[in-house]
Length: 124
Image (cartoon, rainbow, N blue to C red; front, side):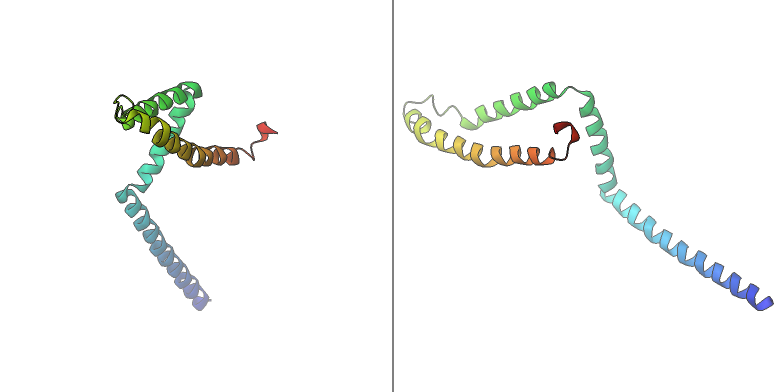
């Protein structure tokens, strides 16, 4: 009886030691993730998504659309204003570049969004 009790105590202590080591290992991973900002990035993303869900979609869309419209205006640099660059810009560069962006990045984003919504029960 005494031997079984000592084996039970030994096994319990071994189990506690192993779980303590495992917990310490988990805590080291958590501390390293918190130190590198991974946990905070995840928490920040959840908060940002929560805030975005409270704002109507059309307001978010209009804000992002107008911002990137201004970015596009800045990127052109007014090249269609000058007599030496306007004909070449309007007939070649602008048309080709916009078609390229629309046919690649625009199509990729639209396809990606449509793919994300394929398993949405509201679309059926």
